[in-house]
Length: 285
Image 1 (cartoon, one colour):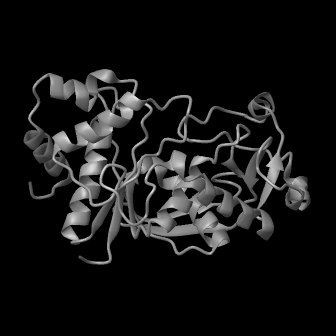
Image 2: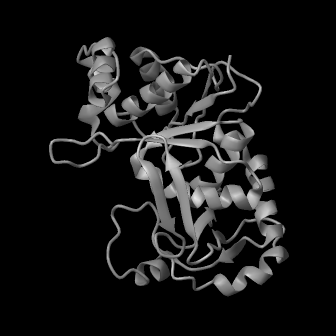
């Protein structure tokens, strides 16, 4: 087996749809082509939306599609546990490192404060742009023994270009402070935010290549700053084109008609789906 380590990282907040299926199939294909390992990670930090039936459905639907993995919650492995809800100590260690390095600060802004800072809707982004109202608190970060009680934000270096070469879309560049603002690393409800959890887990699980949807290209720029601050090496990135519906909208979990579970119930052929994915990307079936 080569040193390649890829991952599947679904979140059990709903049924997986065709977009998820194609991205995970690509991750599976790239891991197998590299004769490497594929890790399944259950990203179940969103306690309010994650449900046990969605966890079991993830495994069942992806096995039905013909995917298999070498490590994960159901098969074990050297990097266990493979569910984010069981990895809190990893995230706390990363938070402490960022706190001690002066990279993060406590934020007490309310949701209403954040909404007032918006000048226009940002439907294509995954975080509300932040005005920096609490930036002056960075000097008090070390007074906190734990992250509980407030939100925590990463202090981005305004004006710094963040460049990386995506294995599918090519060279990408974002400008810190303009393309994105100070982003959340820990939520007020004492849950690590997506950006911190993903970076921490990818490093701990020795992931060498991250395959995910193109809607997360900007998140890569944020995560590269986190990786640098934490002293972690960056993996390679392969962002997949998004699957869109007849209205050119990217698929979402709320679109139950396109879920893998619905397709299974309708008698869909998984081999035909895999062939369709290959044809869409111009790959051999």
